[in-house]
Amino acid sequence: MKKLTYLILTFFSATAFAQEVTQDRVKSVISTLASDEMKGREIGTPENENAANYIAKLFKENNLEYCTGDSYLVPFDYKGKTVYNVCGIKKGKSEKTVGFSGHFDHIGVSKRVGEDTIYNGADDDASGITTLVGISDYFKNQKPEFSMVFMAFNGEEKGMLGSTAIAADKNLDKIYTNLSALFNFEMLATESEFGKNAVFITGDEFSDLDELMNSHSENGLKIHPDPYASEQLFYRSDNVSFVKKKIIAHSISTADMSKIKHYHQVNDDISVVDFENLTQIINSFGKTLEKLTPKNFNPKYNDKVKFN
Image 1 (cartoon, rainbow, N blue to C red):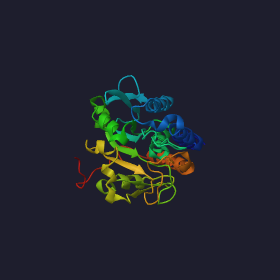
Image 2: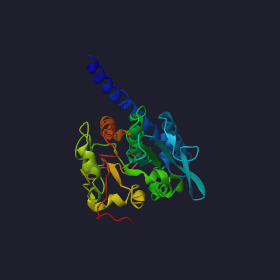
Image 3: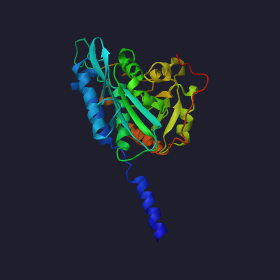
Image 4: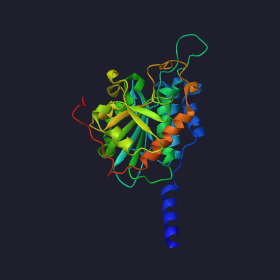
């Protein structure tokens, strides 16, 4: 009986604090970021700053620590104006860190006259921010094996300005020194061409990150090779700011580029979002990440990658 009680308690302690993300939570976060009130979150606008503050509020709710200074908001200059990235960290059992990122800016409001003039950016990239927030939700009451850093980048649409700025921030060097891998979430609102609960990774040929994730995959999550490798997406998103630092950094997406019709269009609103699939992907990542430790997860680049 004592042995049975011990086993029950051990199982309970390992699983009790897992906090699966609900579809309602996913819908709330992405709907707020992609609302008409956010007016497309263009960098340099009051609405863009409102989005940054909203993400900071979510980080606070999940008890993340500041990455630097006394705020989740990490300032940088844009055309003589102070704008912000958002960064929070969850301390794990090790200083070794896994990172999650996405960009929260979009392209604002159209100057054309019409019924709908707002580029809401639900897929691009409110879905990515919702994914990283969801992962921080999942681990809110856990102490994971890895520490975790969550970064919401600004200014991607103007040339990856925010990720460039924060990657160069010397105040975060301690985090970067311990950063084993960065998952950059870019457009996950729709079902991929590979089906439900499936994503693709850019630059799969440059590291073993996807193989390691798939070998520890839980809940049916599958990471597929980039079907659009000829478009060089690996070098065209925010992950490249960290590739240049020789940190393992890939973008994760579900965007089916063969039939997507909302990219940089005013119809990229919550009507395109598959909430069930996005919620499943977030929880599948959470369950998979629970299995990772510094001993079994140490991805490496090969000699095919270009760092400059």
